[in-house]
Amino acid sequence: MVPRYSRPAMTAIWEPEAKFRIWFEIEAHATDALAELGVVPKSAAKALWAWWATNPVIDVAAIDAIEAVTKHDVIAFLTWVAEQVGDEARFMHQGMTSSDVLDTCLAVQLARASDILMADLDALLEAIERRAMEHKYTPTIGRSHGIHGEPTTFGLKLAQAYAEFDRCRARLKAARAEIATCAISGAIGTFANIDPRVEAHVAKKLGLALEPVSTQVIPRDRHAMYFATLGVIASSVERLATEVRHLQRTEVLEAEEYFSPGQKGSSAMPHKRNPVLTENLTGLARVVRAAAIPAMENVALWHERDISHSSVERFFGPDATITLDFALARLTGVIDKLLIYPERMQKNLDKMGGLVHSQRVLLALTQAGVNREDAYRLVQRNAMQVWESDGALSLLELLKADAEVTAALSPQDIEEKFNLDYHFKHVDTIFARVFG
Image (cartoon, rainbow, N blue to C red):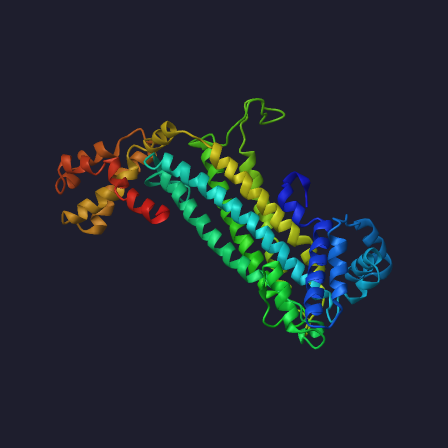
């Protein structure tokens, strides 16, 4: 976790004290259930909660000091709690194994992290929708392979981003449901020394689903899917960030990141206004995606369990969620304050002498009875003249002067094919599909 790319609410989920508090809740709820089943005295559960009610400070340093001797984090925690609670604490952890605590805690942390990420996506979707509506009919050039294609609107560009992040939200919702499972099944996951009703009680208290078969650990295919989902969301962040970076290039300059008063773009060149935020997002996306492969490699554990997954998850559990939380918030700010230049968009649309209307002429010629290959040849030979003149020539005028073209289409027919509004006749349909 790097403080520069962290936000407090998400970071708090992964703090050692927060982890130990979840551990205690798991143990105390389990002791409650054991007491109701008559396995342990009810006084034991009451003693735990009575101590908890005093709002104790979790002494992380003291627990770490015990772990330095025991070389076992859960035992160190239980030892420290026993020192605080007294003799009744000996009934904690009855029939449980460390993974019951560790895996159920991780499920709680990832569920809470997901809730923050869902809120982040909601904020991003709101910002994208607002800007899309603002520029629903703002003409701009669509590009394929980085080359001018046909006209579109800036609103449609943002509508595509909205639809993509809406899918991301649906995937995250499903991934949250899949990751939020509870396992209190004891060694090897057979419930030999603990009643399944204990697991059910803990799961209900923590808002988790039951893990059908935990084999001592919660199966890591769940985690693989979860972190793969975060990786996909990060890729969508990068896609939109890359679009902004391209649009901010000096030769394009159709949109750019907000440049605040007093901001500096370069230590050497005072004129610079660089897309630093979206470049930063491109890099952060790589960090989030980096968790996907290790998460998949964690699926193949030995037999019922090993701990080869543990060290890996201690890194990418916090890192991926904290980084994605920061990235989504940053992207929301970029879109919210994005400077958009319709005049420059129109200038770029007009830059290539009407080449963007070539397909309409091609189709009109075929409709007029010209063989498609001949129609393509006629339009292309005029279009290449415009291309090679860097837009100084007009495709419309060249076509109107081409006898083979005017043999099939009148000058008025040709001119009609250069109507920009034609390309926007289904914008409302697309917006209705995206925004409902």
